[in-house]
Length: 110
Image (tube, rainbow, N blue to C red):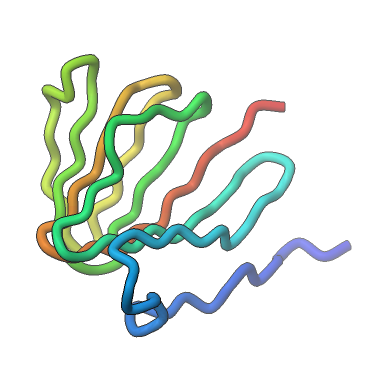
């Protein structure tokens, strides 16, 4: 039985199509978790949304702001190395300032 699975070798720049300001790429989708890379540039935003499962957000590079709550009243600045956790069904949004690269993990229920 294999206990370790190498998911992807992440690159931290240069692999985003030039014409896109938002780019989301799935890097893993298993039975208990899903991982996506999110790249935003030119102050692009992932507007208000929510996940049915808990998530973590790891900022890989760049700067931005993460807002959460019913009125998006909670705010956290994002920079390389910032790691956030968010409960299921909490509304949130992310805005690049001006560019941002994230790794988001969604923890699926069984």
